Length: 237
Image (cartoon, rainbow, N blue to C red):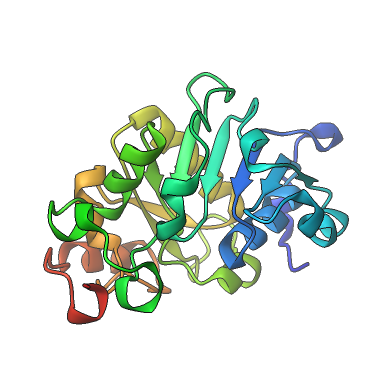
């Protein structure tokens, strides 16, 4: 794997780290599993098809494949990286066994025409994608990685202060959880920009200037400021 020495230095002695649960093993979930394991974190990974379909990823990374119901057990950070239409199908009480103060990262995006169909809470009530997700899982979330190319997680980490270090927007209402997530992203090799609360997270939804932007802190800050709350035609039902 392509890991910079600056990232390797964050690995804790003995290969231990935070306990992290990842729900969804697609492009983002899979590459976060790879990177977080490289950094020495204890990663459990789950998908809708069952742990037996994750043996390859487990063998590659050393992550532990588990049923979705067990992904958050004891976790200090939980990453929800499933299609938005699958969020209502997540098991009730998903986070009941998580560590106290668990930070939950929502990587989701609403693609009504391309994948998810019409979601009334978003279309009619005007909820941001992450606010809608919060309602379903019953826990505050931090929105991050939703506009990040999965391959960039492998190819674009840089040491702090590097002139070409990318920045990622991070939105959320829980200041302590947001700090945990921003520190984790820094450990992964990226800067962060505080994008406000979850009701402000429309600034990083699909169709906005920051979505997919591969740039540094100044450009990401500018892109967030230039966003419009009106969804583009491609991202409405």
